[in-house]
Image (tube, rainbow, N blue to C red; front, side, top):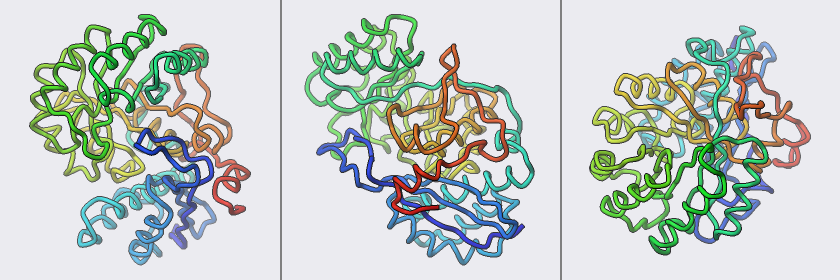
Length: 374
């Protein structure tokens, strides 16, 4: 089975607020789908965390290495793409494009073999996993409404992130966390994402340590992105003194960028994004390396339904995994596929068992978000 075509489908029109200063234009293209077409007529679906223009530019570089390749060896083909494009930047936009291609190759392989990707990644240690609703912080009354909406849907874990946390005062930070705990009670897990990858993040390890102690008082499960993404020494210091788990990694690409954080045990949780870190092939390597160093992988999932499906497949195939991120109320996640994701009575998501990623794109939604009919 040979690859004969690779297509990109930029998504726009309903792009969600990211929490970055100035908000987000709904027409901004932050996610792009990938279709890898085989000569057998099967199509693998992937997703990239990048604009359509950057993904298409990346595909112009990658297509000569892809067309004519087998569709049955995703890990080797993806590594070939990576090794063949080092001089265009080790990571970044090209790696984001490779990520989408890699996911699509795994989906294609699963469809060709009539097997779920989770099994092809090594086998299923679990058939369901806990999703955490991922929302942005807001003023206490609005935050309370957001939290109640998530618990009403059945979520048993919620992560709150970015503005205004860490941007106004310690007093407000504690009020937000106190409001959250009082709203959801003790039976719902709470996580906090400071958003240290925001431009010109001002805080250092001292601020992060004091904040982590406050979070511990409210039973927060983990503290995410408390420091700038590359502050390895700061994360090591923070982890040693924090009463809560320390997490980071959503902006890193390629396994080599993650290796120091894992081998030096600078964090408790690494959070690669499958749509930007190199795809399922790269993420599986990271998951096993982390496991061997007593660190857990929790996928970053601020992307699309394709990313969620890939995260479910990977977390099923890792020996230790407890959560996947689920950005709620986002059309690129909740409307893009059929059937839609559904929580069970225990607030868990089932790992898809159909061929490939086990999902199908909703053609009407794809047309609406991309402006093109499939």
